[in-house]
Picture (cartoon, rainbow, N blue to C red):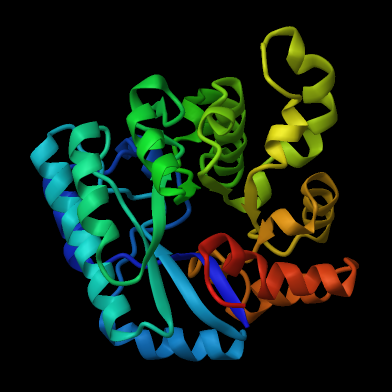
Length: 320
């Protein structure tokens, strides 16, 4: 059965706190350009969630807060919001350990506080790794100031799941044309992979299992060009494509067979993990359909089986 590594749950008390402190790292003018309203979840919606999981053959969802992380300029605000979120996830996973797990969120950009919360929250029920966004207040999370986080995650051999923050990579050429989410999110995915490679993060912190959503954005179709031209500007220990293939990428692609095939050829089946972006894509397709498009693909049956039933479990250290 499927482990959905990319699913979201946003408790109302968490969003209330973000609104109270103005803690969303996405600037309000950009949020107004997105197509998705602020959404909250509650325990009342769990039976319907579990029914959809059963219909889609999903045995476990791994929860994260998506594009509204608990980041705030004031440390106390960020810490409080993060604790609300992590504690809510721990409560959920303790109640439903066979159906729900979660990633630990951090009160960035506050590094010492993040290290303390990482220590605290990692001991909570159901936590299988850590999630951070591709940027924090328009600073890439591959920047030098975040390296203490990578050092600790490397020491732990942790899973690190990235997610776009929906800032359109801070580009008016994206945001002014209304593509903050539809294209900008994939550009954020691509950017974090490039930043990680350029700063040699995977080479220096090789024990981390890095997971990038949405098939890595545009990365799959750029590996050859990066290898040909990227070395001109970067002194790297290995070609771009080699490092990119050390990372993992979830299968969220709005049902695109072309995108799935490109990522499969670029990264190999072993580095594609099942994900859904639940419930975002349900505006366009059923939860079951999010995985059926993989079942119906032209990939070899043994690779489809790996992607749907084994790879996420291997990355997360679960039985499969």
